[in-house]
Amino acid sequence: MPLPTDFIHRYSCTVHDGDGCDGHCIPRLADLVTAYAQTVADITEQIPATTHTDFVDQLSTASFRMTDAGINGAEDLETAAIYLADIDEAADASGIGQAVLLKRARSLLAGLTDMADEYREMA
Image (cartoon, rainbow, N blue to C red; front, side):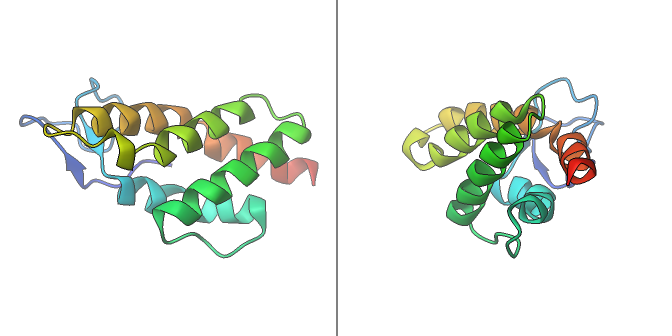
């Protein structure tokens, strides 16, 4: 699933979907929630999260469920949840701390769709 096209850029670039980006594209937290909330909700059997806090909670639950099911890489979702939970504490004048956490979380969430498909097949 490609990420939304509304990214924060530190300079003009030609890659806007996150796929093949050279690493400078930083999605907003809301973009990650929008991109992955439905997939996570399907796993947790809840309504899709609309807030940062709810998304982190559901992502953590999804990680535990998929880990218990033996899905490879599911532990990455818990790590992404930890990074996203730390966003508010990482605020600094330049926003660099938040940008680093968002990039790491986006990278860890990249395999979520495939993991969710595997989870659904097992159910």
